[in-house]
Structures are given as structure tokens and as C-alpha cells.
Length: 193
Image (cartoon, rainbow, N blue to C red; front, side, top):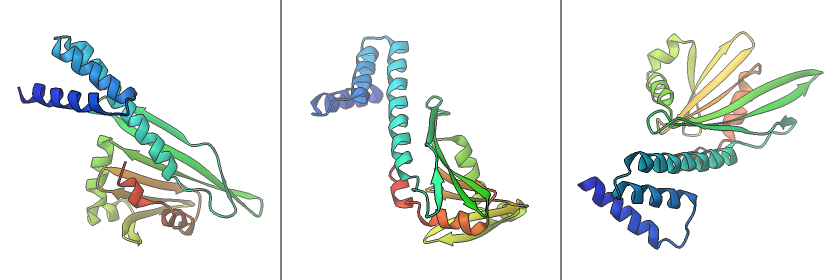
């Protein structure tokens, strides 16, 4: 019964909103389908609304990816949203390139949220023993903890934001390049997606 009341209140709130968009329309349609007993159609509309919200989150995360540092170039940003309410995920990534003495250095930055994988990684990153077993070492950029791992010419850094968003920077670059990009990521804006 509480669920029906919550849906009714949500529907009333959304119907008075001056800004009707695809998300609110899908939620309203889902509510109408639910109250008329069309449960499969209601679930489909609510799943559609959730997908649209994840797409908005991906668009917001794209804007948070930093511009290339001086001397670096970048390609288009890739994003994806997948899954349903249980396994839904938002992922955005961008590749950066820098040529030094005719040698191309490349790194990628990936932001992932709403994924069970992120929760698993958060447990590992928050446990110093687990990080050190995998060859990682802790460092900080501002207030943000980062685990850095170097293997051969490959270096990677991983940061968790509120245990729900994972930022990974990796490539065949020195640790300084990884840390330079972590310094220009707006972690506060990430907390708001």
C-alpha cells in the first residue's frame, strides 16, 4: 500500500512540474499503467525512465572528464549505459595522447558508476592490505585517496568517490602523468552525479 501511495504522490508531484521531459513522462506513464493493473507495461516504462536518467548521468560525467593537459590531445568521449535496476551501469571514457621525441604516450580515463563492480572494488581499495597485495600503493591528490600500481611500463591509478563511483587512469605512461590528470579531475562534481 505504501508503494501505491508513494507512486501516487510522485505522479502528483511530477504532474505539477513546469518542466515536463521524457523522464517525467515515462514515470507518469508507468504510474498510469501500474494503477490500471498493467504491471509489465508499468515496469517497462519505469525501466525506460531509469535508462534515461542513466543517460543523463553519463552526459554529466562526460563534462567532468578533463580537457587535455598542455601538449596532450584527446579523442571523442565514449559513454555507455547498461543494464536494469540491479546491474545498471554508467561508464564514460576518454583517451589522451602525447608525443615525446617521436614516441606516442597514451592514457585513458574511465569513470564508472552504478555498477556492482564498483562496490567490490571499493571494498578492495578501502583495505590497505588488499591494495598492497595487488602491488598498489596509496597516495593522495588533495583529499582524494588514490591507489597507484606500476607494472613494467604500464601505470594505473584508481580512486573511489563515495564508494559508488570509480575513476581509473591508466596507460603506458609514468606515474607523474597519471597523477597530473588526477589533479585536474573535479571530484566534487563527481559526487553530484
